Image 1: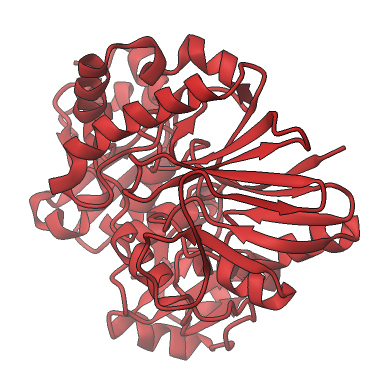
Image 2: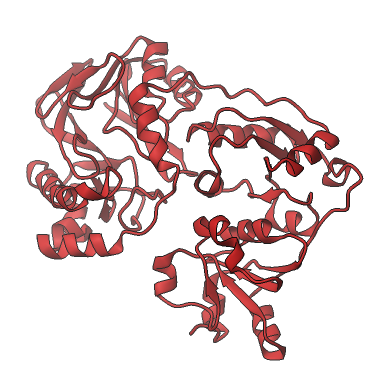
Length: 449
């Protein structure tokens, strides 16, 4: 009996997989922090013979090469991908057999040119599962604009054909195991559900329910901005990432923290957004350590700028460290742990109020207030608070001079991005108010234009 284990990386919206027959195992699309895979291998007492990559990843630094070397396994990816290291190159129709596992490669371009899906077959060659990477996702497909704008139209048509091929060649009961689609920006649209089969995708996947022209037009029209750090991931993966380092950075004291802030370095506070609002170091940035932490820090981060983490505990720093190495931010300048007041080096702490959309409605009824919308363009297109200024969070640092001084109310879809924006904007001359609330409350309060 073949067993498939899922390894969730919720911060990036991705999944990795370990498939085993009880004696040998293969791994598909492992993340950089391979200790999670090694623990699973030890738990099952299996021998990993192959590590498969569906594609050269654009949204994270792979752990595949290091994992394969650590375990003495073959590292498998498309033979057409140009990389700077030895690997087992495979192409369409190639079959790898290990133990009771039989894996057949299918060329499914679209997310990238050389993207492969891997069909897991039984001993008689009947498909049981398919690892689809960034091709067929749950109720959607992988986005097609990450390789380069000049290839987007071509790859969108290829994506349609690839998903159609999977649906045509695999029986309806075949289980589908995608890498992307659980919040990843590699997904063309929001994925639906936590599991699926080829038969279920026949009913809901736009590449299978729409004609090609409509599918292509809809996908292209829905593509919006994606994290800036994506541009750095594929080159790292082609060169071969350095071995992962999850050790804690050096401890720095309060005086050194202040020096770093004044020098323009990044000092990032990992605490809860409301705790940061109540009291924080002047000039520090608030990136609450939660599901979206690494996506938005990586998106806004000025690559190469020294980065120091401030947290409530070493465990919190360690968790952030793990998230950051997944996107190649390895060189942390230091950490500071403890009560924020003790880290202020005698300087006054800053703070700003936190409210909800009901509070905004009350303020707007009493006086003119400047409201900033930090959501993405696609969210704004569906409506925004009447009279608000729209600057997507990922554009804010470059457009900060467009934001007036004085009282400033900031919102997004849930409060998380608004909390980051508030920390960026919180400087002398501005009186920031964080709206920590779901945007549905704005609609219910009649604030939407």
